[in-house]
Image (cartoon, rainbow, N blue to C red; front, side, top):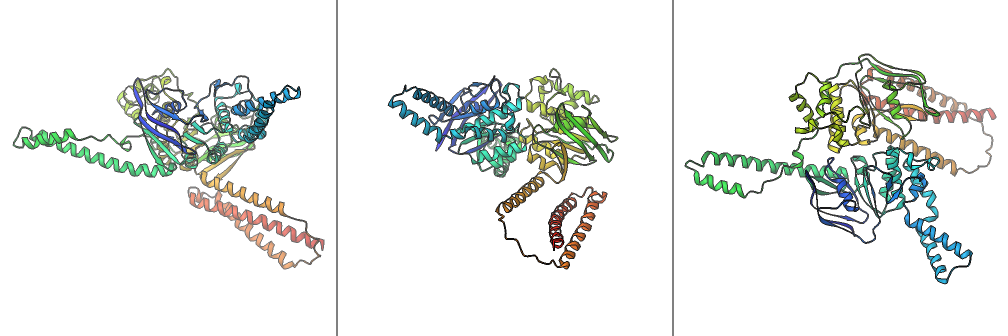
Length: 632
């Protein structure tokens, strides 16, 4: 069943047409990922569907009474037809259930009138119907549902009384998303819903969307999120939208095959046109005039193919060879930090070595950006010492674009870092980041978030740092720009510390994880997928252990039985052998011999984990054996 039909929609702005005779359909329960470069019209189409923007021509046909909810990229003091001013998070999120709230008020009014014997038989019938509807819509579980969704998106129960007015922009977005999820709409229009979520929040949203019966159109640059939530892709390019079946990974495969065929056909036609024009130019006034005229007619009738999407240039990011730094790039010794009464770190030791590629993970609010600020010496620890090695040139990419004066021109920003370059060379450099023509003389304040992010990356390249500190570098970047950044970082020869919730990006660029939780930092070898699998494995083991504990029933007291001392000796020998092996693995992990052999280090880490688990079992077994022996 089609719930929304888009017929010949066209939309233009003074300098560009973003949608040209677009025809699409949304089926019931369908989850659609909407992808394309920044500024190509994705948000415009969402706004047209939900009625916030009028198309120049065409129509949108929506099933009568369809409950549609739209999440924009930023939230103002008014959202979903209601003011956020004066509301707590709980009341704001709960407000998405207009029908339930209306039923609840009606039921309360009828009950009040019934208590005063002011009701008719019709009122009594209506009361029964309202109660039934309230129950069927889950009204009695309303509070627990609000708390569950809010917690999943990063608002614990103790925070739900917080006024929405005082929340940050990202927190308001999360609250608005919670309001939409609680409302159970039939069609969700979500514009970058994962932008302000930590990884746990993204995983919660993935599960929620996947299990929801609602239809959804999701604009996102998070490739793993799209892989786990959608079954169709809309790709917008040059004001047209192509439809691909399957998730994002399948879309990439199909798109590549299509582009290869389109590029081949385009190149063949261009070659034919070039040869034909050359023949006409050479022979139009010679002996082969008739042939040249004939070919000119053929050329005039040819429908020329447009340049395929895959033939376009993407952002060109490449780091130069970087200067060699000290082996220890940065070190925390007994570092402690807190904001007033909120602790961030308690006596933490860590070291970042030359060539490390580290992802700093942690839930929202745990202090990841604070760790970066401490490292950069922008704030001071309240105890302990933070030291940087020698010959360290730090390049810092922050979440907010505070490094720019919005009144500056693009070319001026790079000229300050590379004063030796001529204007022509500066324009060539900026062209690699898609700043071409008059764009290089534009004022930065007129650019979008994605364009400013590209300029920030250009500034990093110009500085040629040997220690990159990146705080959410993929925010505001479209997928081609993210892929270009990944390729550049794969070839980067310096040290990398990155905060990101883009799991696909993390898998591409990191080889070690710092996990910030409970005011301390733990280190794990491997990329994000390896870390995620180990985390799930530990959760499965914990669940199995818990189930075994629950299923245990009291057993009759066993008869006293003598323990064979050979069994105890065997257990001790096994423990001793494993402890020796574990000590050797510890030495190997700390040895410089394997410092850059990540495959070997992963193998050693796996062996260490397995042996430690086996030792725990043997320790418990030996304790039981010796305690039984002592009782005897």
